[in-house]
Image (cartoon, rainbow, N blue to C red):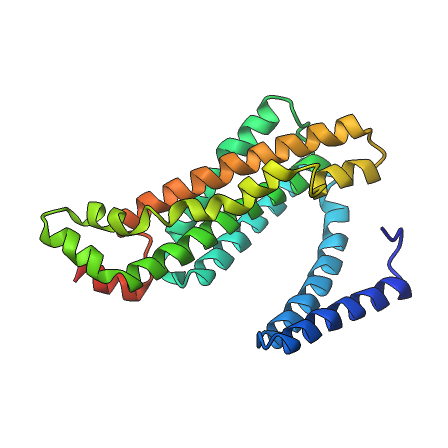
Length: 252
C-alpha cells in the first residue's frame, strides 16, 4: 500500500481503469462509461472524504454525524438502484433494522471501543453491507414480481390475501441476496483476506487482533444483511416498499 499519494498511485489507477475498459470492450459489455464514471467518482470522493475524516475522527459526535450521512447516502443509493425512489422511507426502515442492532451489540459489548476512529469504519462497513442486501433483494424480488405476475394472479384467484400472494413469488428470490456475504464468510482466510483484517495488520496490529476484528465484521454483516432482507421482504409483502409501476399493478 502506498504511504503517500503520488505519481505511482496515479499511474496505477489509470492503468487499472484502462484494463477494465478494455475488458468491457472486448467482452462487448457496453459498460465503459459506467466503469469510467465509477472510477472517477471513487477517486474524487475518497480524496474528499479522506480530508473530512481527518477532522471527524477526533470527536465522537462528529463521527456519529458522519455515520448518519453515510446512512442517508446508502438509503438514497439503494432506493435508486431498485427503482423505488418514492419509497425511500421504507428502504430506510429496512436498512436501519439491519444496521442499528448490530452496531449496538458491537459497541455496547465492548468488542470494539466506542470512539471516532472505530465508529466511522465499522459503521461504514455495516451500512454498506445493509445497502448491498437491500439492493440485491429488491432488484431480484421486483424482477420476479414483474416476470411472474401470472403466479401472483393465480394465488389471488385461489383466495390468498395479497401479502401471501406476493410471498408465493418472492420467497425463492430472497436468499440470493445473502449469497455474497455467505461466500465471503465461508472462505475468509482461505480465498480472501478482507479489508478489516488487512487494515489492522497495516495499522500495526497483531494477526490475532486482525482476525478478531475481521470475524466481528463478518458475523456482524451476516446479521445485518439477513435482518435487512427479512424486514424489506415484510415491507414488500405489505405493499409499502414497491416501485410505482408494481404498486399500481399489484394493488389495482
